[in-house]
Length: 430
Ligand SMILES: N[C@@H](Cc1c[nH]cn1)C(=O)NCC(=O)O
Image (cartoon, rainbow, N blue to C red; front, side, top):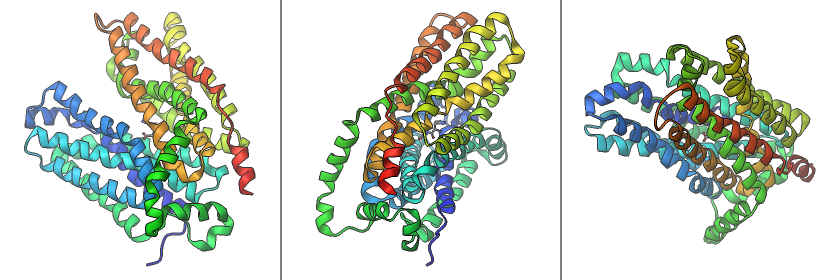
């Protein structure tokens, strides 16, 4: 069967898998009420159901990265999306909450395989100088999945119920599975090698081809070696710290505390506050590829990220301290948009990590730094909740939100410790 040779199509198919994974991440809120009614779930039960995904996803990032480096992204995503497919069907047919939890964990496990795989695909198919742009586009495609899990999923489940909605999701999940199985290879066809950087593909061939027995026996050694290379690299830790702080705040603000913060601090109805979060998300969607493109054009990661993080510090300071003090509501919209667009700038940390670590360990490196935002979100969410422990007022929400400002300042400070990796890698290749 003739395989797909366009890197954009290959990326798009993996992107579809990423979009489906993101969809599941944010899908529980919309179906919480019918789940409560049908399976008698409490609020704590709904929260646990949603968290099952995040726990499995966060903890599995390194194992998924190891598998991607050892087996290649195609096989790993095929396994992962099959788990999402089976999980969606179990979810749709679950007669009891326990089965629902197991199904959700299975979906989380499957979805966890995609991010490290898509980064490996990007490393294998795209030039280093295109990497930040395509990584930015990957964030867009994921977030579109998250947005589809809101109003469109609400209408779908209104028409078909939450069980019907999950059966439709299972059918959609078959699409990337079938295309990847039939038409996608881990690496570009050999004829493109010269164009795309022959040496790199040769190296990768070793880690992704069906390997002879002798090489397979070396796998555990390679895994230990890969983990050592990544964990002992101080610059990977710097990127993880920035991701912990900045993506932790971004997910905490957009996924949990944002609407209530705006509602209390700006004294507006919750519905209007939720609409304002969409402005922040619009900033994320536009900022992500724009920052990636600027970074690729300038061939700089560190400087571009630092500029964006400085704007982020200013954005949070305006939103949390300055605008509420002066009640400048009209300024809130551009400030939210700009804050959203620079909140996504740490996508450059993934790119930077990939550039500092040998390509055969891109999966492990991506998995390692991608654990940080998930731990960051849970820590920041809990600390924020601590500020609200006695009462929910404008003052307590403002105090909680200062965590976002503090996290941005720490992220910005940490960025001075980053090491630029692009030039070194490009020089080696050409
Ligand atoms: N777009 C980033 C960060 C993110 C998380 N939620 C919404 N955006 C991303 O894709 N991170 C990697 C991941 O696995 O979620």
